[in-house]
Image 1 (cartoon, rainbow, N blue to C red):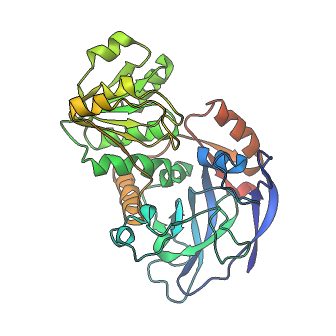
Image 2: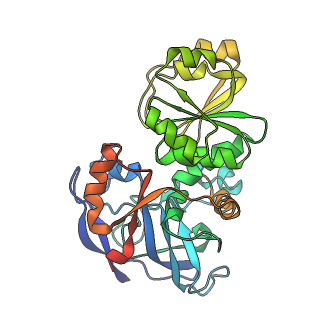
Image 3: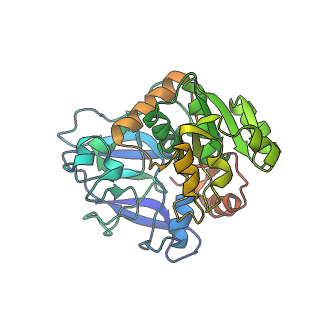
Length: 348
C-alpha cells in the first residue's frame, strides 16, 4: 500500500478537507497514475451532501482524472511509465454480462465499479477518486490521451464530454440534421461543440439571452429562447434530436413539441424523477424520449481521439485543491464557465 494525499468529506454537507488515503499495491494488470488534473462534476457535490442517500464516508470525489503513468504491473501491455493517461467514471465491471461484452460497461448488468464510492477490496473498502495525488486502476479501464490534447481542458471530457458525445453517436447525429441542445452548462457547452463537430445544425435552447450569446461563440448556429412562447411555437416540429442537459426536474412539454415525427429527446442531465411527461406528445408525433449514461471504455477512447482530431476541449477554470469548497458554492450559483478543474500540483 502507498499513502496518498487527498481531500475528502467525512459527513453529509461537510467541507471537503485534507486527508491521507491508502492506495492498493500495484497488481500485474494495474496502472498507477500521478494525477495532474481532476475535473469537478456536480455529481461530486451530490455525493458530498449524500443527496442520493448512497454516500459512504469518508468520500474522496473526482472522476475526471488526467495524469502520467508512474508505474505499471508486470502484465500491462499498452502503457509504460511516462505515458499520459486518463480515467473516467468507471474503474471496473463484471466483464462477462451481455452489456460488458458489447463495450457498454456503464450498463453492466452486475453493477459497475465507480471511480469513487463503490465497494471494493481495496484499502478503505470503497473506491477513492481523483481529489488525490495518485490512483491505481486496471489497465483495461485506463485511456490514452492523444498527443494533440494538452492542458486542463482535457479532464472534463472524461465525464461531461462522454456524457454528451455518446448519445450524439448513438443517434447518428451528423450533416443534414437539426439538433437542439437544451441548457448551457458543463454538459451543454460540450453538446454544442460535439454536435457542431459532427456536422449538425446546432441550436442552443436556453432561457438566458446571455447564455445564448455564449453559445454562439462556442459554435451554435442559432439560439432559441425557451422563455418565449412565440419563438417555441415557430420552431414546433422542426428538430431531429434534442439533447436535454437540464440537471433538475422540469416540464418536458414545451421541448417535446419541438421534435419532428420520429424525433428523439435524450435526457442526460436530470438523474431524478421527471414529474410531467405528456404521453400524447409521444404517441401523436411518434416521438421518442430516451436517456443516456456516460459511455463505455472503448467509446470514451473514441471520444478522446475525436477531440484530438477536432481540437475539442472543455472550457475550464483552474483552481487549487484548497479552493474546492468555494468552487462547490460557486457551482451551486451557476458561477462557472463551464467546468472547474483542480490542479493537483497544489496538493503535492
